[in-house]
Length: 185
Image (cartoon, rainbow, N blue to C red; front, side, top):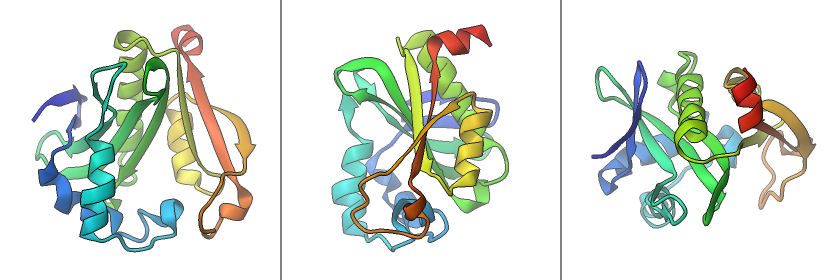
């Protein structure tokens, strides 16, 4: 397996089809999925036909993937995943940051640690000019991770939800960090 990035406590590596069971468990935790799809269960077929192909996709502007399995460095325990991918797959200028970690990883600073490391790599090695992230307005924990990672609130907006979930009536928020802002810190 290819390690994309290592921090003091995390290894971010490329996904493989061997991660199917990890993803199935993650996406079937109602609390993990609360702000994604309202906590609805996900079946194995959806993981194999929709989730994994998205996580295994290579981006032409980069020549590598944009989703990374997160493991605890000391034990190899699967914690979840991080997204760090170009919004336009042919341009590395603007990257989207995201994360989905299992409940056992919550409250330990892993989301902030991984996010900061990805942002640093993006601005120092990957020609990224702006990092953006969004979540539901009511997802306070995720918003706090964005802020602790150096991103600033940009705007509220209303997304196109195929099915309304609890809290979606409050809309979504967008955060960002530019290379210039990052360099000034």
